[in-house]
Image (cartoon, rainbow, N blue to C red; front, top):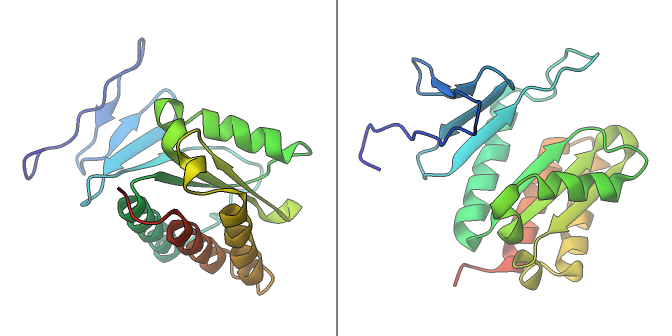
Length: 173
């Protein structure tokens, strides 16, 4: 992509993504937004309406998480993704559904699903990423996260978990 050029997403049938004046790609139908970062990674957000309208993270906290995601994904060549919210009584199955929703990228993806209210953390890997982030690595990552979570540091736990999982995965080949 040339400097100053904005990435144009492929619209799914029946959808019309729009690019607003800030270069943010929006999908007015689904409340979905994507923006290319300086590293070329796409930072993506989906609007989820909840009864509680408080914002869970400040912009600086979101920046820390995004930086950790970008760094870990770039260093390992795997797609790391974080989901924070209620997982429900079948947390593992829900986390696997979220991982599968990554589509074609799911094979090389690692999803960290955190449900603070339920005190649950799930790490889901794809067919390719499981070769580099095995059960032992996932457990180490969860232990690092839980250590921070017990100190009421959700963001620090996510960032530390990404660091541990990235270290375990090693650099891209």
